[in-house]
Image (cartoon, rainbow, N blue to C red):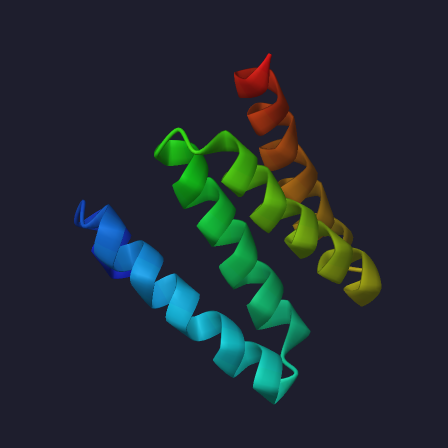
Length: 88
């Protein structure tokens, strides 16, 4: 998914990220799930889909709080701040 995004194939990247979510939920891999959701939020923001971006990032934020990973948590908070700024 990330490679597609870097290559400018944003729609394909979004589809691949979305395909990862149920698999990561089923596996119970909260760290990977939080990263996928955060990436989906960043991609949505890149596409000017700010409300969708916030929804993905807020779920990632909750997972990262559960994990207690302050570095990941701070990154998601910064991303949410950018979305808030975009929304005015």
